[in-house]
Length: 424
Image (cartoon, rainbow, N blue to C red; front, side, top):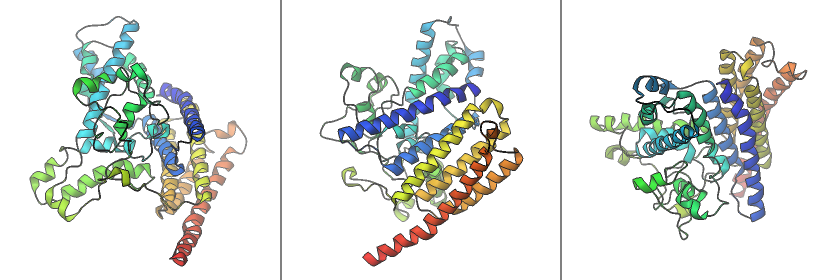
């Protein structure tokens, strides 16, 4: 895990730099691809997934280590071909796990966060799930285990395979000639993220596009059908924690409400979006039927709130980065506590972005938990050794964060509502 933290300490600045370059190029080309609150939500979601990974929050039914030890039929000698074969094997497994996530009702909850942005840019690539706690796709790695590919090789290649899926989340790159027939390109992936009927449930491939062509799920981007992004049932929130569990919560409510016992059982594994007839009639849900005329989610956001939200994201990223570079010096309990604090922080400011009153309670919880951490660790996790007064700076941030939340929710919000009533 320490190795993964080190890799992230290099990867995260690279991701941020590429997102900034995309933004500057989009301004230069006059193609708006970023909306402030959406981008902040995307980057915040990326942080939550990082925290889940670093805390080891996963339940593994059958580990790859166990499979390769017990079912390997041959042993491939270490060579360049071993790593190439591993990469292709991971991509094959990735295609099918991706497809299952899209087509089975409960499994969609593992993936909805990635599609929840109504924009399409590099930042939305970082919208990764924290709800996929149970590793259910172990059987997709059986071919790799049968070939005797060592677990350490899979562990090395897997992050490379994951990071290689970042670059094609952009609207600024058009079709790429012969590469369109070999790898997943931005054009292919724009189709995958679109909610147009022509594009739904297409292009599941992660690196090599031929999986879709072989298994009948390929769709080319059509010049007369510009992709519209998001999900058919809009999430209508900037809070990544809500997004990660809202689909499962909806299934649970429908399972409780339906009168038929068979429907209570099968709703979990039916095609994505399936609902019992009696529940669908009594509790209708708005679904986007005309993507070209949909209204994007937007909250009342003053310039000051946008600037404050960017500041909150920046502070959270700085605190995360300190956690990454100090990972080897922290106890496991400290890592858990640190991750919880950052999780509360993200929940608080993304709720404020939604103008939800719960943000104030989250800020109160954050400052209380933050003070506990300072007392427990005799400072902010050793940060004072880097520069004097670091702990006081973190405490000052928590106090200011609470005060700003009070201002936006109790003062600015009332002013906006009052102004709206006068205009009405």
